[in-house]
Image (cartoon, rainbow, N blue to C red; front, side, top):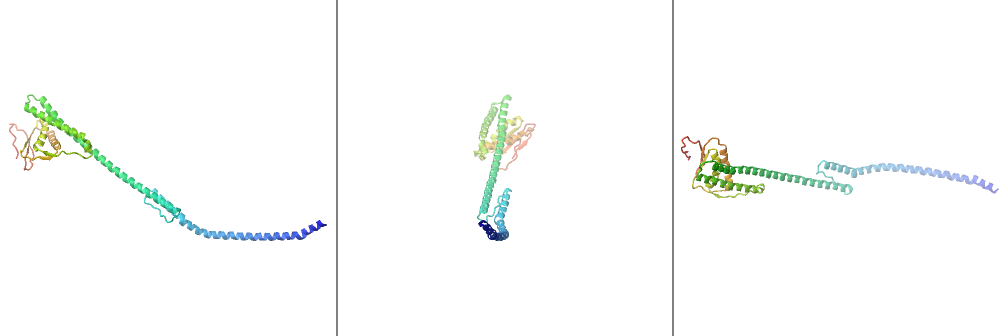
Length: 302
């Protein structure tokens, strides 16, 4: 009986209460779900509104500076080393912009140094080329100068060996030529040994007073053997009151000897040349006169 009473109480009294509370709970849950759903929609809407503003801020403070940095990097890559980024903020983007600018400045300095080095090397190459040209000209000149005294020595020796009945006076004349030209050869060889001074553009001139008679006489004596071989007669007349000449006698002698040697080399017919050198008078061209058939003296000029 007690059990049956308990079952009845459970079914009739308690079970309805439980069901009522359950339905009430379900109704509360549904209400909560509706509220949550509404809250989500509200948050989404707010997010959309706020998100648009946030996007503008992100674009303005992050994306745009990065785009500008990218453009600067492209310009630097193209060789525009003057391109610079604007560092408008003190954040990471600003720090990155400063780093870009420092890198560009460093590359600009390196480029300037490279250009300066290239210019310096070009100047040094030009100087070396000039020194090489000076050396080549010097060697060419010395080679030419060596031939003249050698020709004079060889010609004088051949005359002494080949001519019969050479008087003692003639022998002494050509032996003197051989001795003088040998000394000249020695000086030329010393000039070759001083090649470094020529390359450094430090040629030494031995300037001193020299009698005109010595300068001209030495040059004419040096070409006498060459003149005799071509059957030419070269003589010089000098005034006794000629002033001394301040010069390097060896170098002036080279010039005069070259002029006379070339004149003899390119003279095909037998002539007699007489050079008159006087003081206080205008220069007079040398007289070039064919030898007369009668052998009469050549008329002096002036």
